[in-house]
Image 1 (cartoon, one colour):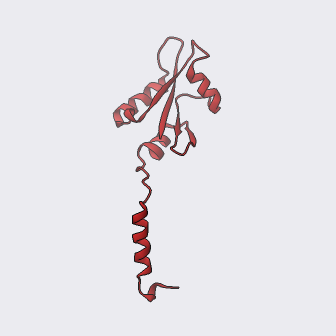
Image 2 (cartoon, one colour):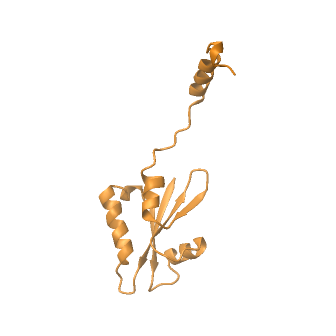
Image 3 (cartoon, helix red, strand yellow):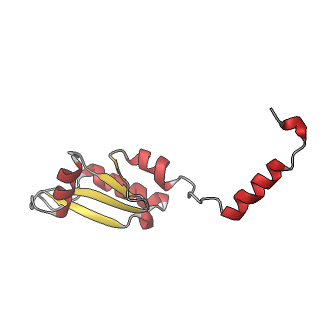
Length: 117
């Protein structure tokens, strides 16, 4: 999984208020190291990578996050707390090993007849 943060920089060179707040929350929560890339939508440069990403994903607010899953799916998060809930705090998905599945199936097959429908 790869997480990209797109934040806005105002004409005076400062991050927007909401972007500053989200960055602080990422740091306080210990999530900043989970962000793989930060793109900047700079008001002084309409061709900046952040503006291009916003246009590509059809987003008109900042900050926002793009999560690229291992299977190639991309998901856009406009709400920071939704990203925290769905991605940053979610337990990692670990597929069951084939041996585990075989053992589970063997266990089911060896049950007594009382469980059968």
